Length: 356
Image 1 (cartoon, rainbow, N blue to C red):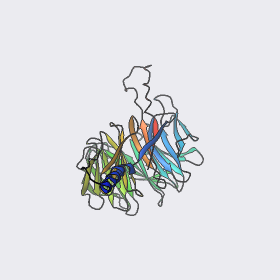
Image 2: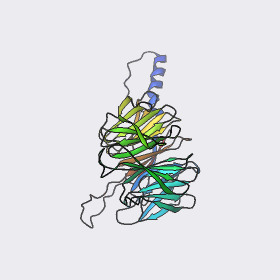
Image 3: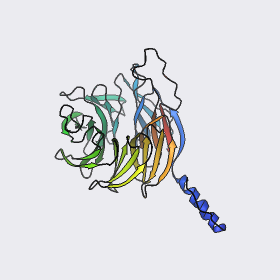
Image 4: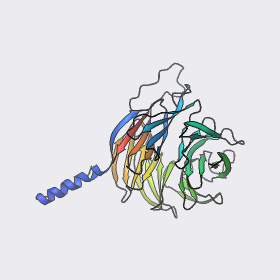
């Protein structure tokens, strides 16, 4: 909360009211809705029809996975049924209306024809049928999908950190790029520079991959603990990194990796999104149960919004500037005895709409 000095006179009172109103420019939560079949992970926005596509793996063991569809106002649409082949991470090609999902349990990338509502292909690595596929980013102009494969610590050849390059025209694995970071997780694309920025969760840095050569051009320390996801600001030449361990946002220069600003956001800062039109950064803090709104001009925190139990990922409508957040539910521990009832969690398995 902003604290103002005592102001005297009518003009000063008006000025104080204007200052007090400034935080209202930050987004506010409009509503949250439950999304079937639950087990929510990543979310993307489809600008072709202003709908949302949500990875929903369903309750453990029920084989009811789907890609849920929601309209912009969060009313439900027709889901894309996946059965036992649930996907977690999502990347979307608006030009081809192809959704890519990481089927982490089976080590496959699933290509989904959104218009037809069907699985078009499953892409795997014949040399590694247990690849830990995680994130997908798409280069629409080149019709490529880049998939992060989580490996071990940097230099661990037994568990390599890799990026799959998938040809969108053929839905085939074109090549694999070895990344030198440790614990590769998130990725962001500089399409103009043909670079991929990747986060090393165990090595604490951001790797810069030259996609033309497949070489790691640089590794930049984030000065944070467990950097997990990254977003790229093409116009401003900045990187925004969310770090789970330190619960913060790191703003970095995308030219040389220098740290511009560190902003504490909340426990378990997991994912990050950027709205270039509003110059605002959004960080989902999983353990804190909040989404932090940061002003991109001066890095002031505009709001910390309670969205749900475990905020997971964020999608932005670049036209309306509406922001959508998936919130995972509390579940059973992995060692829970068979038949243990799943806890009721009203604030979990929801999507939250944040309006400007």
